[in-house]
Image 1 (cartoon, rainbow, N blue to C red):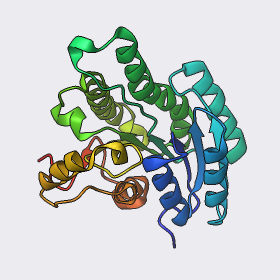
Image 2: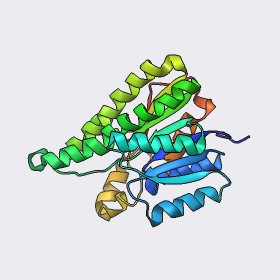
Image 3: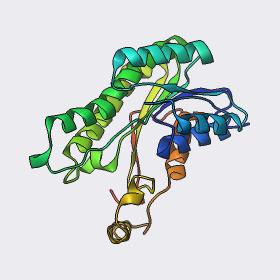
Amino acid sequence: MKLLEGKTAIITGASRGIGKAIALKFAQEGCNVAFTDLFEDENMKATENELKALGVNAKGYASDASKLDDTERVVAQIVDDFGRIDVLVNNAGITKDTLLMRMTEDQWDAVINVNLKSVFNFTKAAQKTMLKQRSGSIINMSSVVGVSGNAGQANYSASKAGIIGFTKSVARELGSRGIRSNAIAPGFIITEMTAKIPEDARKAWEASIPLKRGGTPEEVAGVATFLASDLSSYVSGQVIQVCGAMNT
């Protein structure tokens, strides 16, 4: 028996990176996957085909996660197409890093809207179905910088810290209906984004991590699979840092 057999998940921002790794791991464990990204492009189609090849139902949806009306439209379509929502992974996110003195209002607003407001939007839209089912697992992607802060990332850190507060509040609010809410806080994960960091800076960062390496998207996906499955049936309101002991 696969860990997520018969379940249906929504994963936002899943055409690439950590979101795609989570989608693939869920599909390997028997989960049907509805995933979103901002545009319907080659990456979305390729991800959809990879998921279907694993023998599950899968479909990509173009969605602006920062807009509530668009989110409600997409979630309603997903419920029509899949019939239920067992797992919601709020993964969509962007960065616009710069020192506070140089940060524009647009840079602040864009990061807060995509990273934090999207979590409100999708949770609000998906909870209706979960409440009817009296079950569900909500998994929100935070970050170690949401726990400890980071210079040059005031907007990103604030958005990821906000996700932690939201996660804990939802766990208390929806727990009586059998709905769990947890956050994952990745550390230095090797993705297309971090691959752009100069090699000397990357090596210095890795040297500061007790496990002496960056993490992989698949290692984050493993924790997400645990939280999506019944193995974590009594885990709610928690923040799990996936950081190689970088943040303790």
